[in-house]
Amino acid sequence: MKIILILMIISCLGTVSTSPPLKYYDSIFSFGDSLADTGNFLLSGAIPHTVIGKLPYGETFFHRATGRCSNGRLVVDFVAEAYGLPYLPPYLALAKGNKKFEHGVNFAVAGATAVDVRFFYDRNIGKIVWTNSSLGVQLEWFKKLKSTFCSTKEVTDCAKYFKRSLFLVGEIGGNDYNYPSLAGASIIQLKALVPLVVESIAVTISMLIEDGAVELVVPGNLPIGCNAVYLTLFRTSDKSAYDRNGCLKAYNAFSEYHNSQLKLALEILRHKYPHANIIYADYYGAAKTFFDAPKNYGFSEGTLVTCCGGGGPYNFNDSARCGHTGSRACLDPSTHANWDGFHLTEAAYRHIALGMVKGPFTSPPLTFPPLNDF
Ligand SMILES: *[C@@H]1O[C@H](CO)[C@@H](O)[C@H](O)[C@H]1NC(C)=O
Ligand SMILES: *[C@@H]1O[C@H](CO)[C@@H](O)[C@H](O)[C@H]1NC(C)=O
Image 1 (cartoon, rainbow, N blue to C red):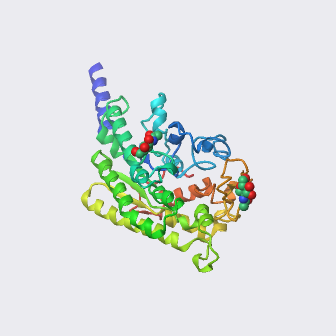
Image 2 (cartoon, protein in one colour):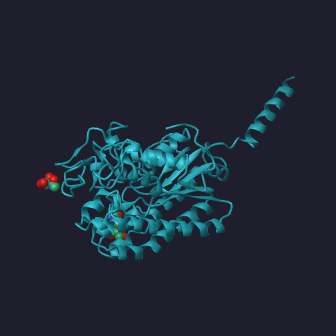
Image 3 (cartoon, rainbow, N blue to C red):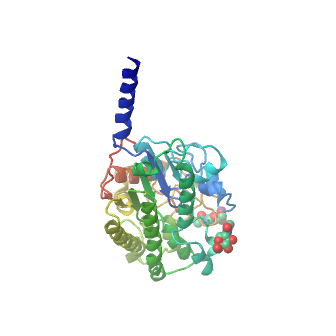
């Protein structure tokens, strides 16, 4: 009798562990910059730009600053919600304590570049670079963590574990263009950087796949011609420089150029790694929907003027950036798409995340549909 019971239990366990229903992601690993950072920049002990560690950053959802460059949640937070996963702990928090990581980790750092920072130091613009934790550094962090956590009690079979993980690689690369632009580079000079940026992203994707990643989402760049910083910096009386939404045509065309080169690189990677699902996330297209028709998305105050800033035609004032003396945040951030000039509001990120997990802004689509609405 006892033996039969034990056998029944064993056979039960057997069926459970050999054929788990694969209907969702178990974990998310995220790489990138301030569009995805959930705390690494602040935890890195960086001295400048710590204003993101104070209100009004975080005011809407967390009611405190978390190191996210917005008033609330970012795309990566909404993706975690969609799959019923906890918000990703920043990698640098793991080093400081016993945070759980079996549902994923966020390696993204505000200000990070795709290309190694030495490139910017060699060109004398190192002093405006926020962080040395470029994409390559974030990949090293991943490898370091992988070597320790693949033998923990939560993660016994790493290959199987990574098969159920979603890897978000980006958005990354925007800062590789922001720093030179802020330092006076022309669009022609920016274009010359694109192959380097795309190559860095492609190399990272290859290494992640060789480390076990099978489902990867690679977002493109946002329409930077609609960014309040670019609109302020490159303001012109030439009306033909603007599209019908008031965005700078040449900078949006540049974002599209970067995105088209990135997509070509992904196509090459798909041939090289046919077993992997390499998904392009069209952040540009998703954002374009609300720049084209702001009112349809609740952006009654428009999309170009920031919610939080210190005056000027786009409410972006380099001498009084969001969080600094002389700036203030609007009463209802959900009426704005643009948060502080560089970054979008939670409402805008939510819309982009919806376009990503529910479509149509991912190609090919994600393997698993979202479990939850958000
Ligand atoms: C960042 O990298 C540059 C160039 O390699 C170096 O000069 C600088 O000291 C680094 N900064 C930090 C904080 O590590
Ligand atoms: C920008 O901020 C500075 C410092 O607070 C202020 O003196 C200046 O008037 C502001 N500019 C605009 C256009 O509001």
